[in-house]
Image (cartoon, rainbow, N blue to C red):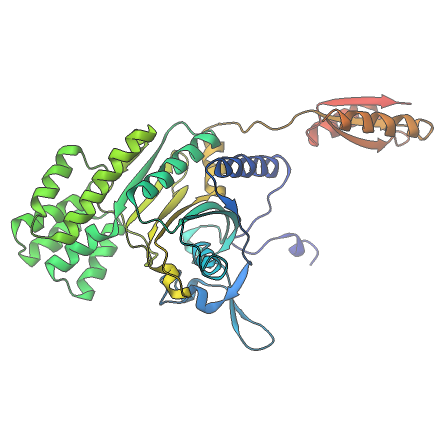
Length: 395
């Protein structure tokens, strides 16, 4: 029975020792970066009313939520996503603000994934939301911040794919797809089955321009020539054309930041969050099969809470980022100045004074009263296990 108590539930895990130290340093470094961009920290509750994440808002499906009840019978959920909580706070605390609001956060999210997916059910997210600005410049600021966040973390090789929800919506509308065919198409794209997409389009006997636009859904990086061709093909489809022009302008602004080579247009990008209204993006690197960062524009989400404020944001999945850094053997510098002071009862005053002196110098110091029969080698071994670089004996 005692051994069973040592295990965690499926989908969650303990983070300890140097991994925990690296995680805290990474979070601090990223938070410092967000402050340099003018983003102010905000904390929201770990659980909220169910309605904050309801189907109408377009966040996580109800079956994937951790739900419970309070004493009054209200349905509560552990937050699966930070953005709706931030949206609620904006409407509550910044309801009269007419200028942009920049907020950043860090916290854990909880999604009850199916066990076969092999994903963590609790993840730490760090992110930012730019509220009250519907411009391309705001899109570019967020993407530039994403790139610099990943560089600050230590990554050198990564790519941000960016799409626009209206490219896909425009195609569905132009092809007059019924809901069942739209869902089938979404499944094919999500599974990267673009041969299946082509077969489905062939069966619909679409006009050539529209069929060629559908074929671009399989592109992971739309070149300038492809973008030019796509705009020509979409002249009769205003929703698609507007999305392509937005993406084109976005890439131009990103060149001012000097980060455009980290960003590629991915026309087939989709998101499970239905509140997105404009650009959507996800970042990938070696050593992680899941996105290390994701985000997008949500111009109507805050409307649900009583304030109109077009917005855009992103979230770095800290656990995925740490795993990628580890697999790429990228070190996160940690403060290694730790000293173990082993002392006898007679030297207790001296040991305490030395520890105080070391700490005042900005170094770490741990005190251990020497036990009879213990050898110096045992204390050196202990110091190694505790990641302390120096051992001082006072006896």
